[in-house]
Image (cartoon, rainbow, N blue to C red; front, side, top):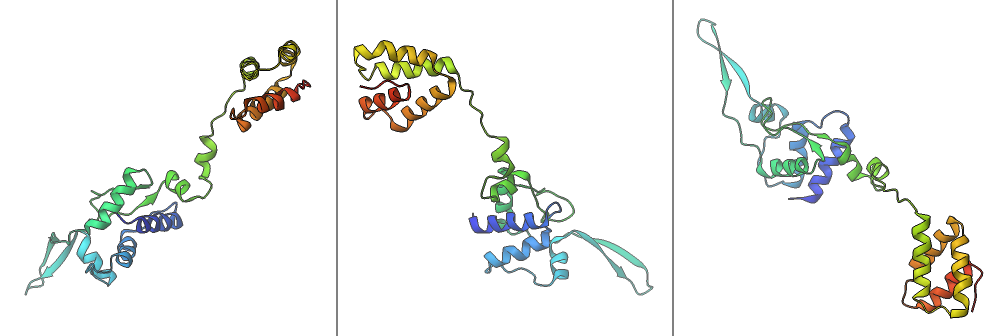
Length: 201
């Protein structure tokens, strides 16, 4: 697998979007990355090599005979494997058994476009997880955390009262501070959080 080749396939597909990136352009791109592969250079020769078609032969009496060309070149394995890999990850749509040609066109998917986007694209917005802040759970979390930090007994009553009466925004700030500071210094964390409720020692 060639990651840069795969990225170039996606980039070229994005440039062609919403239309497909044509099979012959795919072959030309492939030859840039796999220059040792011997493939036809001329567009007509590419067509003759990879696209099933009929040809006409005239006999001495000018009678036409049509023949199907069946002897086609086998598609480059490395090209097809990279296409299949991108397809399996849902980044492109392509039909590797497409009867119109032995090498198919490729169309980038929305997932493929988002993959190329630095910000994750629309998927990053649509897949954002919304967390509901439960005030009662926050009260219990803050109270339990502070009591485990050995708050002086004479301060505990006032602190628990302050926590019970605190608005949700203050509790959210307290939880955030507990997460930021962690419990490596439980006493320091407890003092910083208690200070939010006007309790100091």
